[in-house]
Length: 111
Length: 117
Image 1 (tube, each protein chain N blue to C red):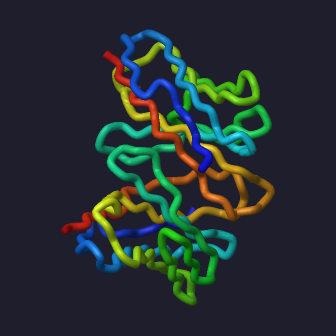
Image 2: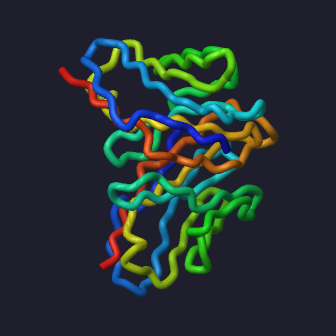
């Protein structure tokens, strides 16, 4: 799996957009980008994924650069409940592959 | 929204005892997983299970561990002769599909906190 690099921590004011970057310069053509988050020792929660096109769902938007070497997860209006560790994971499209969680980005949303 | 259910939420066991952690994956999911997270550390993959057999396992998943899907709904993780270092949060996860589709995320349970004393 391609290695990902994320900042250790970030702060964001409540109501503002939170932009979480992730670098994956060694990503290969069949690898998807996934984002998960973990709120205080709960089970990880799926947020969004994409291959090369930008994606949006009810939780977030995913912006993938044209060269696919980096992406940004955007939480458009962060709330206190979005405080969590966010994991960017790259994995092949083949099903069954395990998710390899790194250390992620600890996002603190402040009032 | 469908959930992955794990029981118990917290289990305390004595070193050397066997424990069984239970999970009920989402009913139409095909792939099942166990992960663990030692306090303050990252989430670690243990094992994946598909079509009634292990499809992948990590170095952590040694002979002390086993998994089973005994009745078509439950998915269990057995730890024989527990050690202090087995103390961790254990997460079960399931995924709907295989066959090259990457269009579905994993759904994780809320975990079982195992404490070995």
